[in-house]
Length: 343
Ligand SMILES: Nc1nc2c(ncn2[C@@H]2O[C@H](COP(=O)(O)OP(=O)(O)OP(=O)(O)O)[C@@H](O)[C@H]2O)c(=O)[nH]1
Ligand SMILES: [Mg+2]
Image (tube, rainbow, N blue to C red; front, side):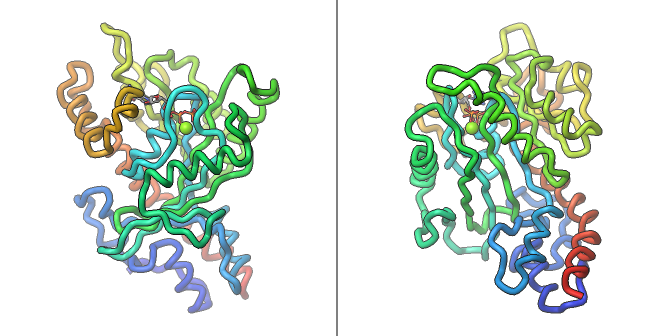
């Protein structure tokens, strides 16, 4: 059994629930590493955004202690697509041009087996969404409520929670894409505003960065790598994700990047193939997309020998294992910071 406790038994229970999910106390040590991703009993935390009445200050301090995962990269690099693949559900607005215009803070809450999956938005507390297409629509509508149907962005986040037996407890952050110039309908300041917004999140030491870089652009132009190198120079919290491998020019490949010769990161790069715009238009679902991605790597002349370490499912597993070790290392400081507040 994993022990992470404070001097207050009632706090111990709340900490355990926050970190492990209601039913997962002690499961960390029983994980044998062989189950499919969604059944990993890995203690991935929820960041506590709504403090409980009596322990509010203790829990808000968890925000600074526990990891969150943010997707960072240039506009249309595939950030929302990667995030959706990690969650395993179709619910985020994706597409060409500027799509994500408000930051999304997404909490995954693991519930008991057999319970129905649902989504709640912080701005609609009494409504439960069970249809993920409606979740996407609500994200679009809520974005438009603050910004109108424009190309403007807003720094006010949208908070939503997914309750499901098929997820691990985790907070994910979808960010607007970094850009270089303001396009028609955008103020000149937008480039800097987006960068400031993204920087605010990724500079926090508890933020694990998924640096999303499209394979059909030269790595030297990667906005994700530029920013992550600045805020995480040692690379200990940066994972490089190479999207759009399927869109590279014929006769070229991304082996230099994937094998660490072009730009070496502390952790190996992971290549993924998300749904194309044509797939989105045809409503290709997540299961078909995953199957297609698996086939792509298995049959690829360039990447076949790396197939077991490529793709969205591998990325999700890698992330889970990393989060597990981060949480293990953080537990003493979480415990002591909570103890200090409640002695
Ligand atoms: N063919 C192909 N298309 C991709 C891939 N990843 C993303 N796309 C397409 O690229 C476009 C942008 O994808 P999104 O996931 O919305 O990208 P984003 O980075 O979240 O975009 P913004 O929120 O606007 O910054 C969509 O048309 C996707 O279908 C990929 O691996 N292969
Ligand atoms: Mg997006």
